[in-house]
Amino acid sequence: MKINSFFPNKSPSYLVCFLSIILFIQCNKDDSPSEKPTEEVIEEQGYLDLPETPYDYTSLPTTGVPHSANDVNRNSTNPITNDGATLGRVLFYDKLLSKNNQISCASCHKQEFAFADNVSKSKGVNGLTIRNSMHLVNIRHFGGAMFWDMRTPTLELQTLLPIQDHIEMGLTLEEMIAKLQNTTYYKSLFQKAFGDGEITSDRVSKALAQFIRSLNSYGSKFSRGEAMTDQEKAGFFKFHEQGVTSNPTPFTVSCMECHMGVQQISFVNDSLPILNFPIEHNGRGFEDEPKFMKVANMMNIELTAPYGHDGRYATLDILLRNHGNNLTDEDRVNLIAFLKTLTDIEFTKDVRYSNPFKK
Image (cartoon, rainbow, N blue to C red; front, side, top):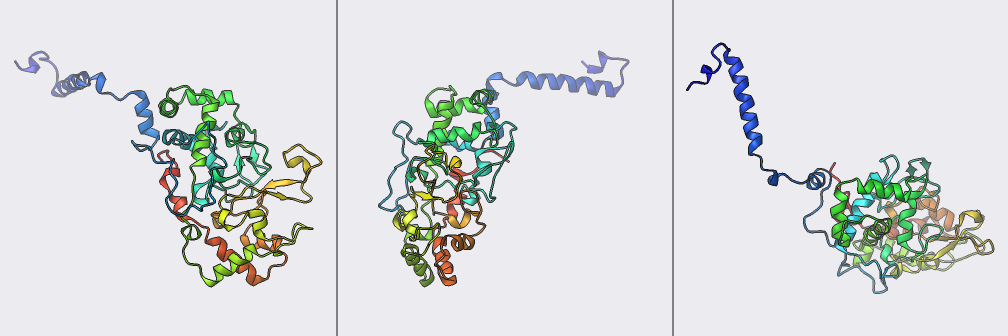
């Protein structure tokens, strides 16, 4: 039977439209609901680029790790797991953890700068931070007290404070949890990391801490034990030489007095007396104790300018001129050459630590 026998008075164009509608309905009827991806899968496929098998975050490399390495920042109640660090990586890069959905942890701790920022003060949701962003590397070997002023005893406690800071990210913990609960891809990530999909601030802090502890850098020339040039060797010995600095007075010490020696240069945990620094800003709450600030890690220092707790030193040369009054121009050149042997470029390109969100 001819189809136009049903519509004897209609034009051919009308018949074409009618057939198109029939075909569209039939095609949609053939789509089986069981073949459609769930909303959760659509969300993950649309926004995240995660490997089917998680990256390895738990292992240390077989070379480049000094014998003096130890997990002084390890938390026995929160061991690093691949799924936990994966969740932490997503949280670290997710701008939803800020009030305006524009700031993430990675906004102030950029991988290309060894997880430091390349400005003196970082931009938050409500202005500029009061301190320079300390770079994050080998934190698992870094003393437990966190922030420049060491005001938090553990990394787990530290991770939640920038999120709640009114300048940095500006959320309450309740607001943070509500946002994560309403974000589809988090339920499965929490399920994999903790065994169920419950989202709590405690789990957020643990996942972030696991990821940050996994940021290991052992690929520098120095870590690999490669032969140094004469200039680098001269800088190495100057680093250990007593009396290279007389600032801040009245101390006359070597670089390694505060940075604990080259064999532990990745694992600095010391306190530097900062004279004439306002006591109310040291964060420790004891008016009669010296003004202590945490000593920055030396690994990848070439990449982490500007320097100092407030980013006051734009270059390594300026830093050494202010910290090493007894250094000659040649000494500074040699020291900088040595410090550059601590640079691990591969660390800044490691996909395990990169932004997991599709661009």
